[in-house]
Image (cartoon, rainbow, N blue to C red; front, side, top):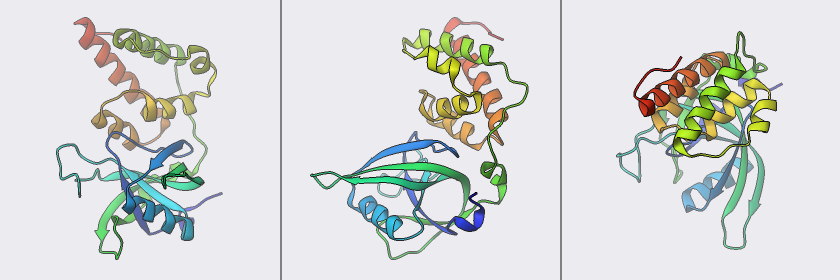
Length: 211
């Protein structure tokens, strides 16, 4: 099993607006900027890890302000396209806190990563006292209000911890809500927060409250 000793103390950062990576989940990326092509090359020849972290909207696009917490991913698959892009897949390992950015002779940003607050990320995901029907009811009401489609059979059959984390990564939550879901202490806390966020959005659309 992976432990923190397998994770690099200095982690290359891939800032992305509106994207998070949770432990155990998969994030496919289409990499085309030269600095991040270089980062992927270095990751392949080094520890194999990349830090996915949200960039703040409205900040300098060349060096955006970053969220304090991101997700470290291990490079699982890599493919070069004919036009020089990289199609990669990361698998989430652990969240990390940016202790500080460090000066590095690289075109991309590097941070000292602190994993100490996220020991549970290395354990199997669990949810206690969960009500799948309530989550799916809230989700269905939200999707109908936003005119979004979903594979409800898959949502009903997926293991609940996996379902919650995949929704946190892929459902159309605003960046701030997605960051809050990333920072939730565990999957149970993430489920509770997600249900609160969904209820708020449904109530906003309906002009009332929903429990």
